[in-house]
Image 1 (cartoon, rainbow, N blue to C red):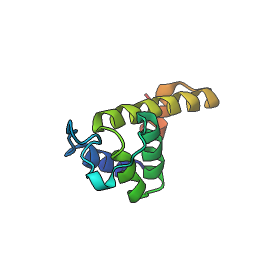
Image 2 (tube, rainbow, N blue to C red):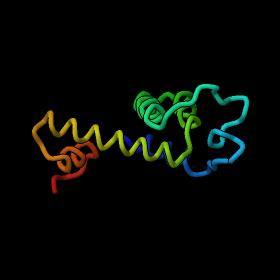
Image 3 (cartoon, helix red, strand yellow):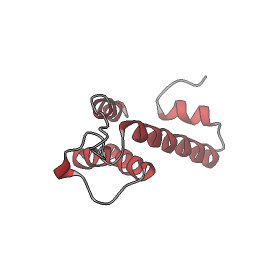
Length: 106
């Protein structure tokens, strides 16, 4: 279910580097936005774009922050989502995470 999203994340985060003069991680000067985006906004747009298979928005959000910041934001979003689902379902976060990933119960 999420295999394609993880592959895209690895592809987008792998080769990028953050240049001191660039301001945005690996983004060409012509494509950078003037408004600063925070890492949580970038993660929210990135993850929702992955879920909708929207390559344009995936690449746009990935250029808003450094690869490390995006990775941290995606991780934080995943943790919060698993906790929210666990509370909603009355299950443990581990059980919900395993279910979402299609893994057998531990």
